[in-house]
Length: 240
Picture 1 (cartoon, rainbow, N blue to C red):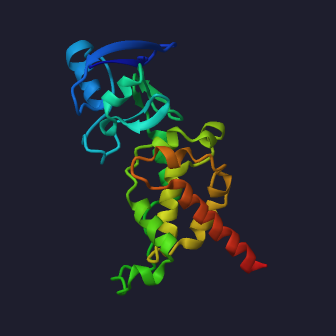
Picture 2 (picture 1 turned 45 degrees about the vertical axis):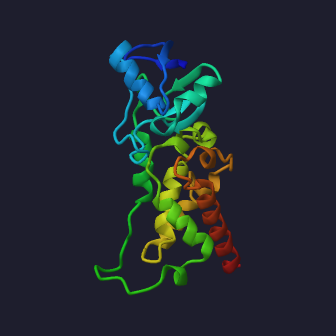
């Protein structure tokens, strides 16, 4: 079948963006990323987009498809084309570079802010323990999901709170904060929870749940944020 793709176009230095329509003969199994490749190879070699693994692992090809962030390599083209013209835009909440390419600098800055790595008291081997003995079932499940985050920025792009408040660190960074704060091996939990309740942290999340819907790896960012909030509230009760 023939699919129609309405793609956002804007080059560096241009003031105004434009939209360009491409018609592509679709084959079974083609993804939206395959459509980008076809357009670049056969129609317009100037189309700019990112990709790497083609297997929904690297997160590089994230764009907004029909108004919602998704991985182009994971999104089948024919089902979308059957519903009508497919619109493709760059991720939101990030500076634009060219066409579907955005600058991830702000996104990575939030990761640096949460220091997403284990802090140890000393360089020594871990004591042998069973994870289920150290974590409640909800935390054990969420920790596993948080580890699956591929840093694609889909949740960051579609977060209304980030759009409203650039000081909000965003769902992806909070997932990383959760991952280290609740890891039994981490020795900096207290400072991490202080960060979580500081301006821009977990308490500022408005629970729109866009992050939950668009995450391609089912990391459930909102649940991670809510678990942080619950822990902070439990700490307040203990202090009282």
